[in-house]
Image (cartoon, rainbow, N blue to C red; front, top):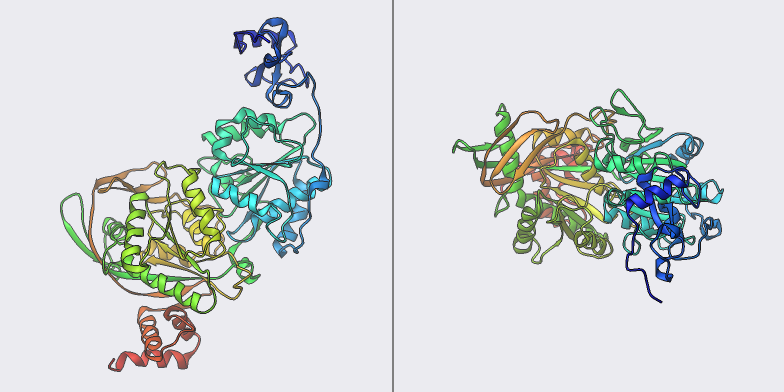
Length: 589
C-alpha cells in the first residue's frame, strides 16, 4: 500500500475545513476555537488515506486523541466505578469536617482547602475524588502538582500499596505521555505544572473528552499565578472544560500582586473554604510538635568595600548589612569547627540517639543553597561527620522535574540511609515520614519557604507516634522569629526577603517585590560554632547554658535514653532537674 508523500495538512487547509463545518468539531460538534483544532485524515494516512481536501476534517484535540488511526467514530466510554476501592482507615477529624463543605461547593465554584504540611491533604484529595467518582458525578480526575517527586507521592498514595487510603488508578508521567489517551481503565492522571504548560492543548482535550466529567485538583496551587505561564496554561486548559476544581495548599499565600488561578481571595488574601492550622494539628496529634535548636558563634566575612567584619550571633545593634552577612557566612562556610559543622554534628548525634532508642530508620535532611553548596556539605559530612557520603538530591538543570534527584528522593524514602542533602527538591508536598531532623543551611528566608521546610518533619509516623521533629538553624533573628510563630495563623504573607547568591562571591540582598537591591562581592572567611539554646512549639525555651549543662550531665551519667536539647526542655518544667543541671556549671569537670 502506497502512502501519500505528504503526511500533514496545512493550517490554511484546516481553517477552510473548519469554516465549512460551521466552526465546530466535525465529530463531537462542539464549538471550539480554531487554535485548538487539528486537521485529521477521515481515512487514516497510515491506511492509505490521501492528504487532500476530500479526506480532511477539522476535529478537536480530544476527538483526535480518541480516534487515533481507528475508524471514524466517537466512542464515549466512562470509567467504571467498580475499579475503585474504598479507604479502610477512618478520616482524620479535619478531613471529616471539610468533606461535606467541599462536596457541597464543587461543581458550583472553585474550592480552596488549606491544611498545614503533614495534615493529610493528599489523602483528603483522593477521598474527595473517590466519593465523586463512586457517585457518578465525575468520570475523570487530573491532579496537577509542582514536581515529579510530588507526582510520585500522589501515585503511591492512590495505589493499593498504601493502606487506609482509597485506591484510584491514576496514570503518571513515568509511564504515560500527554499525547496518548488516558484510557478507560484509568480514572485519570497525575501531571506537573510544567507538563501542563508544555502540553496545554492536550490537557484541554483530556478535560473535555466527549462523555467525560472531569475534576481537576491543583496541589500547592500558589504555583499557578494568574499572570504567570503555569497559571495561564491552567486557565486555558480547565477554566471552561472542568466540571469542578479543587485547590490544595499547605501554607497561606499572598495574592495581592499576582492573583492565583481559581483561588477565592479578598483584599489580597487567599480565602479558603476550609482551613486547618498547624496548632490545631498538634492538638489533634495529626502532626508532630517541633523543637528548634539554635546555633551560635562568631562569623568572619569580607564585603565589597574589602573590609573584614567579625560578627557574633550575640551581638546586638548590628547593621542590616552585617546581620545578613553574618547569616550568609554561617550557612556558606562549612569547615572544621564552623557553625554549619556544629549543626551537622549535633543533628547526626540526635539521629543516632533516636536509632539507638528504637527509631531504627530515623533520617535527616540538610537544605542547601545550590548544588555546589550541597556538594560541599555532602563532602564535609563524608569526611567529618558520617564517614560516608549522604544521598544528594539536586538538579543542576534547575528543574524540579529532573528525574535524577526525583529518583534519589524516591529511593531514599524507602531506604534506611540516615541523611539526604537537597536544595529545593525536598520541600512542599514531598512525603518522607521517617524524616526527624532538618539542618537549615539555605538562603530561602520567606515565611512560605520556611514553613514548607519545617513541614518536612511534622508528619506523624505510625511507627513512632510519641515523638517530635527537630530543626537546627543559625540564631538569626528573622529565622528565630519565623520559628517562634510557626503555629500562628497567617492570612497575608509579607513581601519575601531573600538572600540570593549569584556565583561563588556575589551577594544580592533585597525584597522579592522588585525593590532596590544591594549588589557587591562577598566572601565568607570563617565561622566558629558555639552551643545555642532550644525552644519548641509548646512554648518551652531553654537557654544555651542549660543545654550545655544537660550535655555534660548526659556525658557524666552515661545516659542513652535522651539528648541534651530534650533534657534541657524537660528541665524547664521540672525545677529540681533544672537546679541539678545548672549546678554542674560550678563543678570542676
